[in-house]
Amino acid sequence: MILRAGKLAALGLLHGFSTRTGGVSRGAFSSLNLSRDVGDEPAAVEENRRRLARLGAFDPDRLVEMRQEHSDRVIVLPAGPEPPADARGDALMAFGGDAVLGVRTADCLAVLLADRRRRAVAAVHAGWRGTLAEVVRRAVEELARRGCDPGDLVAALGPCIRACCFTVGPEVAERFVREQDPGLARRDGEGRWHVDLAGANRRQLIRAGVPDAAIEDLSLCSACRAELFFSHRRDRGRTGRNLAFISLAPAGGPADPGGI
Image (cartoon, rainbow, N blue to C red):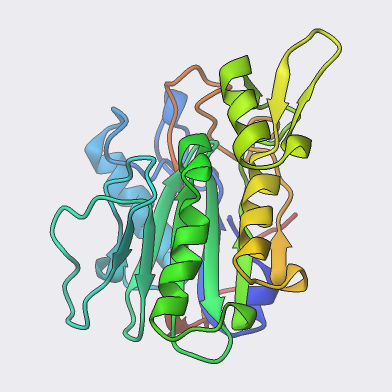
């Protein structure tokens, strides 16, 4: 099953957020694990990726990914057909072309961005380190530097670990309070700190000029919804990866076989 955002669907863009259902992987990676780097059987991962491409209605050879490193580095695809080799970063963007930009998550937040007026899209991977580095703000700034108006951007915030489940140490909570917003961290009745990762990224988008009304949050917790999402925190590090994707190629695939 693939989840889609209404605001991006209204633009006619090919995009989606995968769930863990519909694949062939077993055990901790059951069933639609889309990462080659977590210890899953390679043949199962390749079949899962073919299934995702078929369901998402895109050519799997057009899927472009990064070596994600929890940074604020932005990668801009070149005009040619091939992506940069071994590209490392956490925000991937394209201006023209039909590449499918993908980011992998298992609690981290995927943010998909599109310009309503220009041919530009971006996929951002924002864990807590990338959020503190303000990778999503950097992505908006790079889009603007290349001619996009932040006021024309539409953003979709995918499933991620939400404040209900995202407990952190006091040193991380203090950084969110000091560097982001005091309202993003709170203590529960047992004294544990919780951080609102999606809320932090929404605030960064708004501060960067993206209208609040143009931001859509799927509001799903990857840690709570074990039947739908992989979660590094919940599964103690041994788990698969979901994948979020976006392309300038027009949408036109099959309807979702289900939804939330």
